[in-house]
Amino acid sequence: MKPSTKRSIAISCLTLALGCALMAAGWGMGGSLSNGRNISIGGTNGVRLNSEGLFIGGSNGVYVGPYGISVGGRNGIYVGPAGIRIGPSGGAYAEVEQTTDLIDQAWIFSGTGYEVGTAIQEDDGAVIQNIEVEPFDRIQANIDLGDITVLQHGDSYFVEFQSNIEDYYKLSYSFDGSTLVIGSEGEQKAHWGTVNANATVTIIVPVGKGLKDIDLHSDLGDIYVGKFEQTLPKATLKTNLGNVTWENSRIKELSANSDLGDVTVILPDLENVGYELSTSLGEVMVDNDFVNKEKASRHPKDMESYVQANSDLGNVYLGAAS
Figure 1 (spheres, one colour):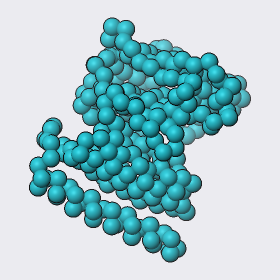
Figure 2 (cartoon, one colour):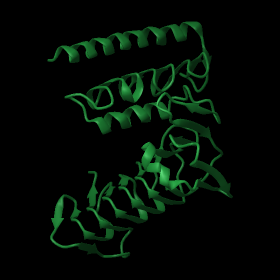
Figure 3 (cartoon, rainbow, N blue to C red):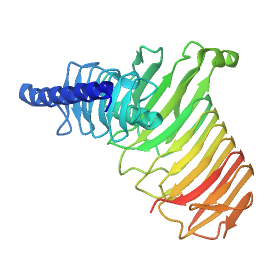
């Protein structure tokens, strides 16, 4: 093992020891308790202990929990389920994208460093706003730039916005009855490429709460919907440039499309699923079997679940998680 790797592991182990000590100290000091095992000391950028782990000092601080050990956020050190990562480019034993996702997921659910309704400026220039919102049962999102992620987690409804081009591109939310509406505004698209523009929208739905309809559209960005416990009635996912992923949720009717990017649909099983899959330039695969043509279909709209998926330039995959 390389000396640098040994040092990183040693630092992470020391961090874990520190985390355990602070956890014990938190219980001893009492902190402010809510929802059972939930401790908060010092407010914003302080110490937070909840079901997701221990968080110290904001998203560039220290995290210890089921997602691994993170010191310094995306640009720091990570040791956990995805391996070992040192710095933003990763190490020899880590998948960079996977570790970034794990770190981001942990901090989204932390509550530390994200005062509700307050924008936080990160060291890399990104502005992050984590907002607890009223309950909703439909989502309608249409943005010019940014990734859109929908997850089921925890016991509250949240919307998180992140952008490094706040000066001329803003994400917003509103309500139309029980529908959460996500939009964007800003006309200076010519500047996006000059500043490595990046924006994300993350929508959190509590465990045990379902949705009646999901309608997500991004002109430039990936779309991802994670696993829900409940069967969802209908979802429409569309991006002009980016990948579309549906991850292991039952759905009665799904439309997933990308003009330029891959479309991946994972369902619990394919037993009662009808589908129409197509690509103009790419490959179509059904449950790990390549289809030797640009289209594949089975009992369209004549079964319990129906999936329509298309990419003009990219691969289309439909598979079962089990």
